[in-house]
Length: 525
Image 1: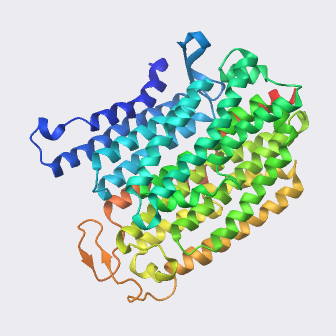
Image 2 (image 1 turned 90 degrees about the vertical axis):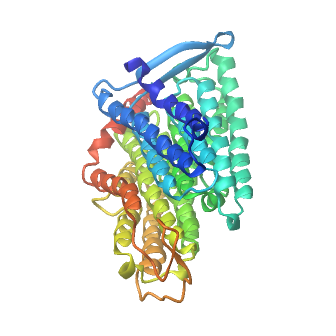
Image 3 (image 1 turned 45 degrees about the vertical axis):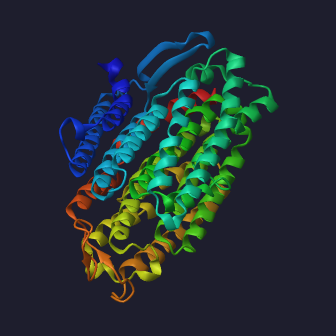
């Protein structure tokens, strides 16, 4: 069973996707409405299987032993030494859980709000889940690349077909696709370079061999080929411009997955491949990575403050929050080779990985909450909002938890990730860390001023929004209606985890810390 666990987790969504294509209405004499309900229920139910197995994996992974576990390695394309090599360590286990968790929530929420081309939507969403999970388990560069590219097509169609017409969904989808594909070209060239040097596509073998070590030019080119591909996905400034358009146009669940998981694939790639395979080049260009992170933190926060579209504001906040990850990675890269800085560098990396995870929770919740208000008011303009705390108190409470987690309030999950990043960075790149701290102040400003004040505080003006809709019945209302039960069910688990990991961060930090201490000790030799 252990040898099959990762395979079942990864490919169950593919089975679910194929099942959505079957003619259930014809077989069971169902009308279109009943067939669509069956597809929605079936897709959501199937997604709970990989979620349950991901929880099992969380507890089954032996943190004391560490390293790669649940490995499967069988020949795939023997002529060029490509293997179906999969496995997980303390870095990948939490993100497998996060992917299955957000996918199940996204499918459950979408089952209540998606009303057009239902079969295609749930088919693509499950395919997307398989692609994302594959990236987190792949230990062969070709396999990694296949899964990396596989996720592009479903998200392209999810944005282009189910996006809001006024947000230019086709333009946003093409921009997303072209940006990511451009980065993938660089990555493919670097993968071929590793193969020509090592004779293998195995990621673990590449980490041990450290190809191009000692060759400044080739190691630098290979490192940046990977780094640019991953930085586009993160996205880091100045490769970020596709993100606000994609987020704005995407359907609610698409935005949740885009922010909660797809952005993390870029940061995961840096931690899995770029840093351990090319440590010399990473160390050489550490300040570049740190600078990009700090610029992203401050630039993203300032641009967030300038937004009046709530969805674009949260999208730009992701640019800022992902900058903390690059700051942590850059600080660790600067410490490579220095045994005295192993603790600080592993702490910075643990904070970066925790930021990846907690950002997925908080921003996923925020995009769900934007969907809650948009499904009712059909606008996202903060100038049209105000006084919702008196009309939608439950919505206000849920939004406050997610927003304050994003802000980094103590006792909420976002606090620990920022603390560990800055604690590690201060010991290695103190000047840059001090500059990055400005981002925390700016984050508090746009969350409290732009989101909380303009959305919830003040007097409610019934003349600002002419039409309100009941999200469950579709009937027109005379004012806002608070969160429905299915929306509560969607948001409760996210809220619980934001609080749980804020009070007990060790539940997840031990995964990351053990992994990165081993990594940085190996790179210090």
